[in-house]
Image (cartoon, rainbow, N blue to C red; front, side, top):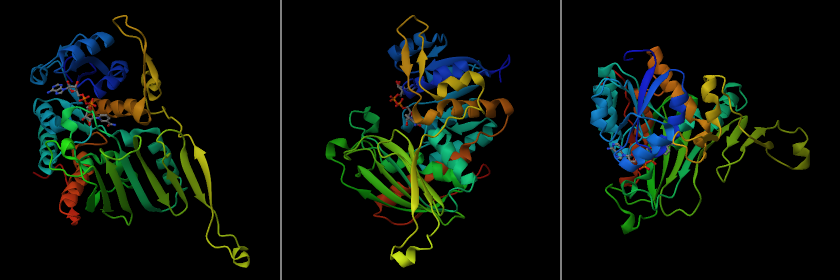
Length: 388
Ligand SMILES: NC(=O)c1ccc[n+]([C@@H]2O[C@H](COP(=O)([O-])OP(=O)(O)OC[C@H]3O[C@@H](n4cnc5c(N)ncnc54)[C@H](O)[C@@H]3O)[C@@H](O)[C@H]2O)c1
């Protein structure tokens, strides 16, 4: 850390990036916050709203300024890998929105840059810091799900009207939200994938990507686990509201995501086989089903960050009207920020360091490769900090 105590952080990209500003500004170990965006109007509006005086339109200029210890990158996905490598090579710690990169070679570049720099990289995967994930994990750890048998992750989001760089985006290259909860729960990685494209992307939706599919479906095998993960992704031409979640099935209990994305989780507990069943002619074990609102747990957060796990008000520094900000993604944002800042302060790898982020991002890249090849099985490479 430069100079006086605390981490100084530059937030880069002020769309989704704005959601993280109040959290960094409140964190007791963050000394100063800068904002970076090529869009001058957005930079001025957001800077004014949060009273942030350090503003840059040029990422390289900010990187050359040694006042900044760390960056949080939230620019368009095609820039993620280059921005992360540039930050690490400039001697800065780097948090980055998902996915880590779009190509396998770029995953390795970031892994290598993290190792060479001695700085901290963290992929800010929201799904494994949300209240739902914590609830599922607590049931698994308490033995209430039994042994995991099956997993289904899904992410459907209509990207019509999104910025141009999303046009034709291969859905599987954004599979982290659908897949990572299982990888977090099992502590393992993906071994291979078989995937198919579904539907045909209309000509006007095709962008810079090699992708003819509006939707993709894949089956992923795990290393050291018998569970097969089924993942369903769509960004175009699927008529349903946004949903980003997962169902986890064990031999004793299951947790399923709400069908309309909001609201309580659906929890099933398998009951013992009723002894009188054979006499009645009925078959099969029953499950008891109930709806559960996953609770928030702020016990591992500094008290200053606790308000940000639920919707909160922003009182603009420029005197503008009070804004309500939604605590999206299961209240995960303060938890992510705290993990990243803590890794920097404590000088240890972040929970989703570069090798982990590469292992979590590569399966989706390989799934798209499989889909393009009509469903051939693709082995997913392994990443370690020692590989070059
Ligand atoms: N749940 C999640 O984890 C989640 C949710 C939303 C978005 N994201 C990710 O966050 C990132 C940002 O998403 P978004 O919806 O805010 O995108 P956006 O396109 O709305 O905003 C991106 C911002 O980056 C700025 N920008 C573009 N190029 C730049 C450059 N060279 N230097 C500095 N700034 C630049 C743009 O001006 C814009 O303000 C994406 O990678 C997206 O995948 C993740």
